[in-house]
Image (cartoon, rainbow, N blue to C red; front, side, top):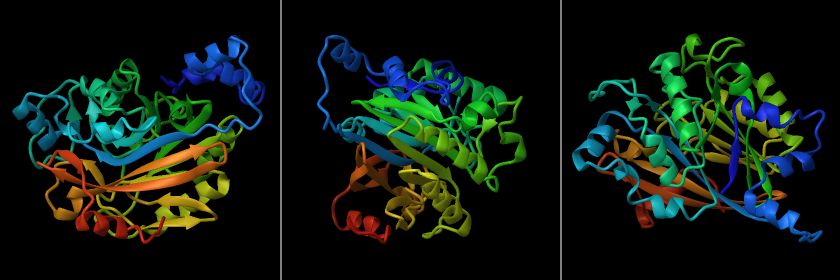
Length: 347
């Protein structure tokens, strides 16, 4: 199992300017990797491991989805038809748009999202390794809601990026080592979709917003130790088929800084993608688990990306459809091809 290092804890493992990458890997590598090393087995010079990562869109576990969970008396209900696919990858990343905190039931039509803390373990059981908390719903229940969300995810051993007890944590990369490859995950939300009170500061908890200078600094830091750097952005005009200038400017800056892949969320529909300077940018994967009723919001995209030490080796896009306003399922027919065509890319 991969060991995720995130939040303040990573600070005690590494001072990037002073500690060699090899020593850092030795401290946080997977147990099976350490065993092989300490037993005297040497890796060949041409060793080039591969790691598969599935990326999905917006995950909302409140409101109508929570009602479906209650109706079926099954916390795993949203993921029953998709978890085999999720577990086919080494790592899974998504955008969680729900505070995980005890509280009242959220009614239909409300725009604040809360779900049971136990859903953190459901995410883990369904295959999720790391999620973005940098969005406009993570802090719907304030700093207490964020604190409980981070605690519940940590207890379930699901890593998170884009939020923290202060700005240092929120903007710090989340590192995960798998099969000998080190991944760095960074996540940001657009400051035009959240109030200023959601921003992490030097002394208050919150989320990371799309500050290009801070992102460049974080990507440069991550590149010192990581094989692969992934940037997630929560931005764009809702229900638009194409990215706006804010998305494009930030995504291009991330690639220019050294990111290997940019993944986007927030518009609730699949948007066009692009290949920029040899790197892929997916501006919006659409919804993954949501209760919205318009047909486009029930269609989404998952990506299985194969990485090696050179970065992205292969991308396998997969169309999904949300059934029963809560359950994503794989679709491969004409409808699936139509969803994939919105990317305006060929693979």
